[in-house]
Length: 464
Image 1 (cartoon, rainbow, N blue to C red):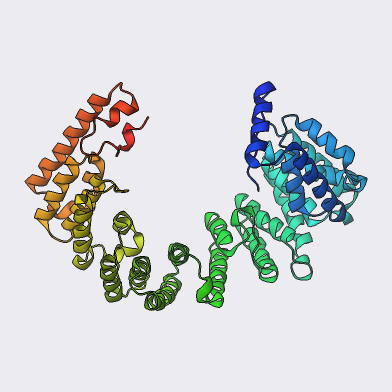
Image 2: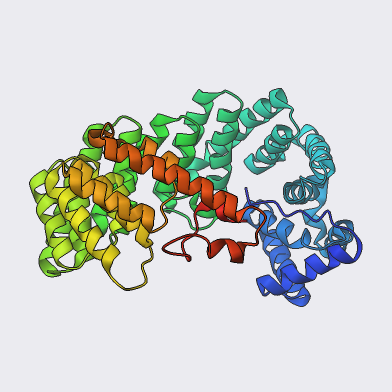
């Protein structure tokens, strides 16, 4: 469902917001009327085009005088769209979706109109009528009626999965699955999404609706609903698509990494390893064609680590640093590299590079204090006590004030009992207390000048 637009403002304020929204979106009043007329023509040819009803509802619900907008459309619309009140109900329900925070009156009226239509003309009631009615019941907190209407939606949609798959059918089946899961009918939700998968197999993934009709989008929706069967089917199809596309159309590395993690999250470790091993091979081939590229080498380290190939991962990490990889904050927290986190061949070079970066006389996006902290925690992980304590002292001087982070960071467990480390923790706590005292009652511009070391680096609690 598209995000709601709320037009509850009155008078001049409401008009101002309306005008500003049109300016910001680049859509003038005249342009909107043209779009309304074009969408109306689309509906005249295809009254069951739910995507068009969504678009029309979005257009007519943008003005501050919603009733006037709807009446204006009614006068211009072909009569056949209002026949038997079904078309009017579709519009009212969709408008109700946009202004739900203001009132449920449009949804309630839509439900009444659709009830009358399906009762008097059951042979003409299609899956999109029943879907709209089920959705209206769900939003009006009438779960029993919503479930019954969703049963009719499934019955009328099922024959079309094979005979007439379409984007509209995909939209309805997606929402049917969500409604069923929301109402506790998980078996019904699985059936609805199984039909959706068949439709997407036939028509391909669809743009729009924030990616809901892509394999990744369906997997995320199903995972939120606890539907592992659908998640697995969608992820398998996404991985198959990646392999078919070849090297030139591979998604970004972070998206590929997430695919493996999705399998991992639902307990499919063998599939996760298959994904990561495949991606490690692809990245290794890319590193051969683009030697010395720090980003490619870093991604190879990530995929090889995930695939369990530590030697390849550590070699790629070494080469990435040698090639100039400098996103040390990412490397320090990247979950893809978790299996290397306690290996000296990973932590010692990271700590050394962080020290060099912290000592550099250039602007640093991470901030000098953060780089010293990265050096400290990785030195501790590498077993370098003196290096960790020295880097932590520099971090505090540079403005590190996060007491809780220092106390909870397990990287410092090897030196936590050390008296010098205890003194450093106390120093951070004292510095934080002093800064809070100095900043109390001051303006943000004055607060920033109080922090030692790097006045441009503000800790979160100092922000207004």
